[in-house]
Length: 253
Image 1 (tube, rainbow, N blue to C red):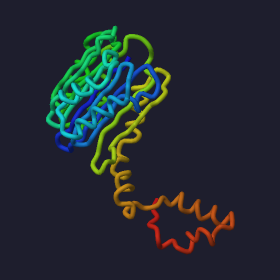
Image 2 (cartoon, one colour):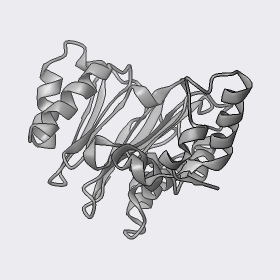
Image 3 (cartoon, one colour):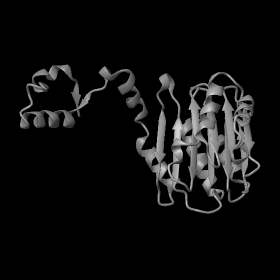
Image 4 (tube, rainbow, N blue to C red):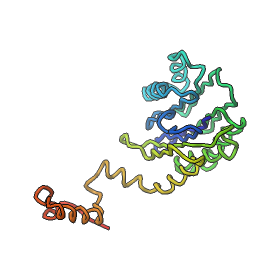
């Protein structure tokens, strides 16, 4: 009941993933990423600990194949799982558990691996990989989201409306470029994720500056003036002497 894709950008070193399902809150369970190191998927009766173990192995320099093999060997319930890995060398590896009863598949293209179970047909993941590879110049996040949309258009899940989706892309200094999640949707999880992405797009640089160079980011004038007004209104100026220390902030807008 899940289809997903993990991908890599050679130019930036970023890894990313996009995923959707008819269950709730998929974004915190299946996808694990490490900037410059790799991406790991653990889905179908998901045990998120397998994803944690897989990404740790990739981060330590293991190949995708070696990571998959070691994770499989670690779990007595592995026949229920579906795993995928993409490493820093561009290699991918998968595992399809023997207790999966549905249509399932995987498809690889340069820089990506698509994975799915409980699918409508066996063309879903190949459509995703093709969409990812269609335009090499697009940013990684856009390629991943287009791949997810292509998976839905190709048939997606066999039954049940898509209720959650997520898009994640790593960034330098341990700060994600994107970590967007639709945890509950009225059957339009991918469309809701697209809307969220389009609204959020362009904020990545500013939020990175807030984390890494906070002195360079000005204070919003509306919030600054409203805070001063409320401080005065409550008689808290001695405790919060913002008005007398305006010179300590750069205010714009």
